[in-house]
Length: 485
Ligand code: NAP
Image (cartoon, rainbow, N blue to C red; front, side, top):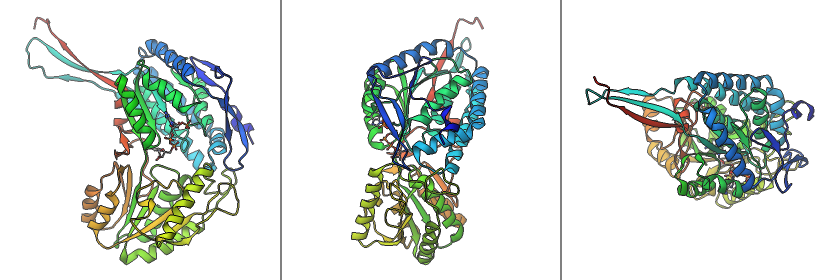
């Protein structure tokens, strides 16, 4: 089974173009969540290895920043092609370490490639300005320059595509990078190193270290050579990194936690809403930052929606991601399952009704049944906390104002969704929702052309869209005098 993906499976770190082990020789075991068995190991690197990776990136930056936008665009196009040419092998590796179905893993690789292609195109459009000068004898230019070495830290739920949104704009802008993938899914991150080598991206432009999160993070934050940190992960760790990087005043981009609401109004197309709900809830077994955490359904359609959602949830095929036709794989680990069980117990104690699912799947391990809980109440834990699992709590509401207020009653503001066929309501509700991304009559909205990112404690900055390259560029104002005009 490993044969197809093994060409990309690296059990070493990439520093300055060399594949190396941790100084101490220490390693981290990587487990297949579908079987609980060890797949292999990766180095447990720390401060010293990270410092060397940063220095290698700084050295590479000296020449990489002088490449033309067209040259970098061509590199990214090759990287896109390499991703797509090896989609099956990369997807298999992703499923092995992460658990998601092979169909979703292939989709993630395609999404990674799409982001890389987008930034290949954006590389050539990082325009500056010529500003009308207030002085007759002087001219004003505003130019864009790469920020320098950037550091990227990514989570386990999208181990490939979260990196594409960081490596893509970094290379497009002319930056060099030090990357730290999540310890539970390091192979898909390390595979980017193999791909970069294959397509001839210069040594030291992309460096990848795995290991102790605290040590690697501390070195990244404290090292003045790093000019920007881009992080995707929990709000808790994001806050820590913002605080620690203050000492060296770095740029920060943060893609943090979510608590997505999904509103269904009486005037909605219920079948369409259920279809969108299944995608927005169960993708990656509910383990995405944009997964619906709370369903709010208007009283007139509440029972019908719950019944249809429960039916659709019960039909999902659960199993190891590599098996044919599987739609939902295991959760990432035991802790994730325990958290889901705690949320369900809390809801049941407070009057919630489990309509379908509610327990571990008969397959054992970390497989969990898709679960719908009716009669959800604001005092239940999932009103405030990210579930990160296949549980759909459904709250009942009466009025539009009440629904918007409930949806906004969270410190998060990443994605939200709502279903309505009333045009006036579509605009009112869109404008009332305090979220960075709104899906109207759509449950799946991520695409490289659009800016992905959150408000409030869900983050800072945007990935994708024309905004996605901004944070990798510094703005320089040039006033040219003495022109004798
Ligand atoms: P996490 O615990 O914050 O970990 C994310 C990354 O940060 C991992 O690489 C982790 O390394 C590293 N890390 C942990 N502690 C660190 C520290 N002290 N210093 C530096 N790095 C540190 O998050 P997760 O559980 O993997 O991911 C789930 C979270 O990510 C959810 O909250 C989800 O909403 C969020 N997410 C957000 C987006 C978005 O675009 N907004 C996308 C996907 C996920 P180790 O793996 O070695 O611990």
